[in-house]
Length: 312
Image (cartoon, rainbow, N blue to C red; front, side):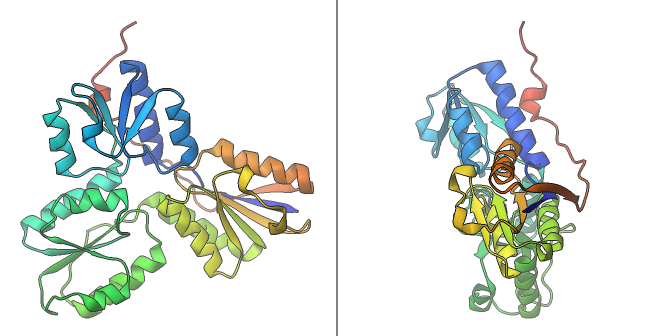
């Protein structure tokens, strides 16, 4: 067996910043420490923080007044910020800057009177936060059929934005349908789909022809991880999205297979290595790392943490 380790894979700059923010907040404030929604969409990351006393909540009402709350990498709506202020919470905003960019675009387009067509997945934390910036102006569009069904005149004043973790190919198809329906539609100056999502998809596209089987490390609620598995499947290869080695099935592999291994932007590298070691032990696999693109992006900690120092 041969294993091809796709690079880049795993944690992106936004995930690193969010996890580092939570680590720093634990040092500064101790527990109980509350996080609104999952810090990132990964089972291992969430469970590790739960064991250290972090409490993940789905509503601000669950958090006692005057507590510390950290907003996840996916961002929150103004309504959530207002609810935190009413409870006098010490809020730390660990929203990925690339998500914040989409929020600011939504605010700008709404102020300019556009109807905003947001390409994304209903119910995703990021989509909920973006819609919350201008709920009267934003319509969610999930596929080409929904583009056709929009009850807007073809000369409507419209703009489009996208969720940052979409499939590039799927988004391009929907954007093309929007441009055909609304020739005067405007969009963001720079693509909303984040660099890490694009790079991980690019690596799979380039390497999947060599593979017999594809393993994607990531959780089922991770949009960018799901897209990686779908991308591999669309190239005719069996692809499995798994949280870890415990989900791997012997029936997926033959001893002579070439296995492409990658990871979504919120999947820890130690979980990837556990799966690789299992294949090495079981099938005497050799490992090659194929780097498609180098990444050197990093984001600063939230301003609420940068201004604080630990008391010795």
